[in-house]
Length: 117
Image (cartoon, rainbow, N blue to C red; front, side, top):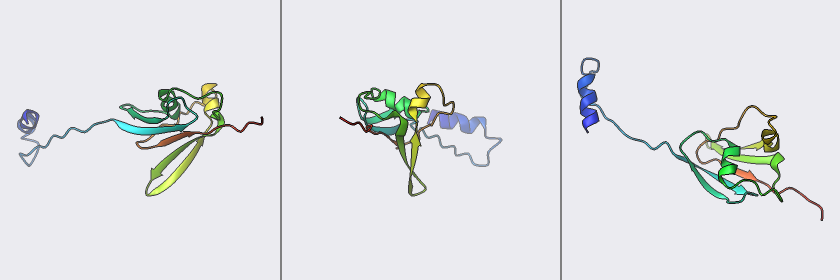
């Protein structure tokens, strides 16, 4: 309330209405990591997060089973589901310079690699 009053007084000559509304919004957002990671689940972040960051927050890859070459991000955009395929092996090797940033409610899926026994 004090901030609203102060802003209203400070900018009185520049605004037509004497009413100033101040709201506080949380900048945290959730993404979900599942598949061949150590601790699958919800990751909360208050800063920009890449797909690799989210996997590392989930404890990292399960290197015995994870397919780092075909990590998928599932995103809901404009009422439709979009799927992105990422090669995080190239990211870890430093061969990809453009990181893939996640958006709120993205799902990062690390599939298992196919192996013959």
